[in-house]
Image 1 (cartoon, rainbow over the protein chains, first blue to last red):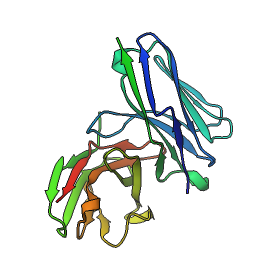
Image 2: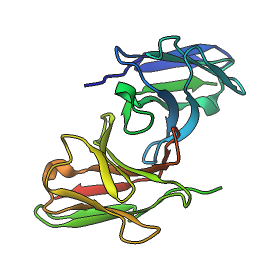
Image 3: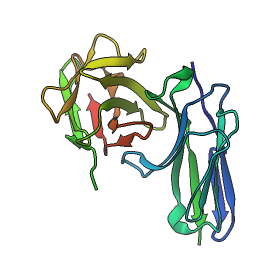
Length: 114
Length: 111
């Protein structure tokens, strides 16, 4: 069974602060995806990383895939209240398959106070 | 921008009844998925579907569940005899590769 451990589970910060969310596993994944989910809605894809060591930037968000493709991080610079939400990591293609089911972490609830 | 759509948004049913949840994946996608999320818990994989057949299913996806692609656009999840513990948000997703795009979900409430 593949597991993704996401930390921290809750994060409460002030506007302008930086933060990092971590996603760790003992399994190797072919891809690692980060989603944002609003209450009562479906996950919205933010980014996909597929190469070990890959770094992708999306405005103030920086995503990194570990060299061994077992872990990932999401770093937000100068957080804003609009960043408040639930962030999910999800690993795909465990066990050597290219595509297939996603294994989700339990999520990080981020609250950014003005 | 293309998106995955799901109907209904909310379904209330009595225990033992059959329900069908419907999804329209993004049109050029070839891989289709169902996931569920019980309130306060992780998103869990149920089943993946490719080339008109199930490619993988989880332990949750037992004989009470089935999926179908009845035409070129719809993808359905049927629960034959619902149980209280089937109450959850059900999400459909589709992909043409690594990236999976999710629909808005159907909230299923079994009473």
